[in-house]
Image 1 (tube, rainbow, N blue to C red):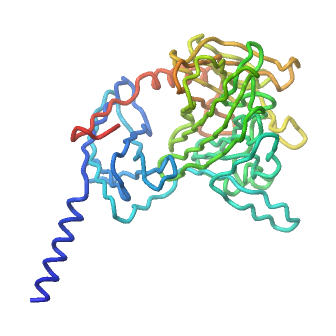
Image 2 (cartoon, rainbow, N blue to C red):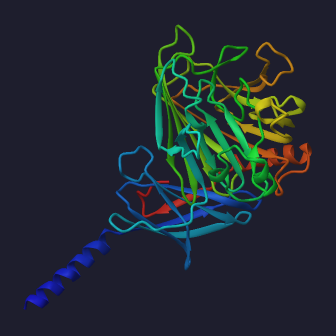
Length: 415
């Protein structure tokens, strides 16, 4: 009798666990007449989930669960898929609140560390987040000078000083290697095919940072209460970095505002999605983003409608004795709802690497959204010339303006 009772209890437990699982049917449609690779699919979660399994037919697709606000509860599920022109694909997503998470190979990398200054072999300590107050410059104490995000195509560094400029790490081959080079590739590593720092950002946006705007020049983040850099996640699908500026006053008469700038890099992409959230609606703020004017042989492209790019030869650190001069292409796209106009600034020093191609932007709400992208000539999988790069930028904009169409069932599931 006791054995029967125990068996019934086990069966009841299994039924309860099974009932706790949730299944979502996802239908994704590519509205473009062109094929797309690594198309992100993102599903917002409305219940606690510890395990997700995504299948297309019988094939299991690597996916990622992310806790975006560090409250211990996963907020989003993401995966990527290749799609033919105008194709519709169907997926089955099984969510469980109390199962062991699936483990997939990490195809993205996020890192920030505390610098170890020992004379012997250095062991920089990895951290998830760092906050520094106004008038503190952590530039020489954070390794490698700011948060890093990478996949096998591209790498970026977000400087932790007042500029918060976006620096570019180029890959020679499609493999992640910043964990080994630390953004500071040695001559031997170059010979072995590792990537390297290929851009000098100077006093500019680098590749796509957000700044204020005074009508002639960028306003950076000197006047803040504190700044936080956080590695939100890394995994098989994407890495996310948040930059939080508390109490920013771009001008003396401006009401303080908090800003969270979220950078999202997906596997299989050379572009970064930027989601900006303000603590209040900001119709009073003049804002800007843009690209460093690469200077040597720099050629600009703009469609005067939110898409801008440049192409030229750059030298990381502005030091040809240490770094090679490498051809680099940059690009940025701001949707029409946020785009205001093109501009340019030289920081008062024409033809020095402190000038930039500017996108003047703004929003009447508490959010802002745009993308940036990059390439370098050391890539064995990249672009041969500026015409090819500028054409790719046009096609990239077209793709961004035709987002994936998602239908989730049962009703109530959120995309």
